[in-house]
Image (cartoon, rainbow, N blue to C red):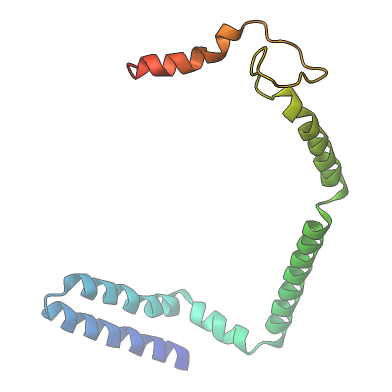
Length: 147
């Protein structure tokens, strides 16, 4: 009962201030004040204020908030442990496989500098079939820009 009265008084005061602001030709600020003033009135009309007042004095509601907090702490704790370990068992296996692929990929995808460049030939790499195709995309970009 008191909460509804206070919210209604706050809304009325805000609307009065908005009227004075509008009288001073500051319509944007007045509109913003009207919007803020209508929030407590809307909360009273929807029953949120009654619900909050009942919740604030209910031991069951506070126990529920405690359970929700404990749940959040458990979720956060398990995420921290996962990050520290590097993920779950399945995720660790996938990460290990990705590291093995990365260990193989750099040597396979190294740029070919062509014969006689002074670079030692790596074992397991095949020579390129056509060296003219290497620069075809670069030539297309240069032609596009008129160079």
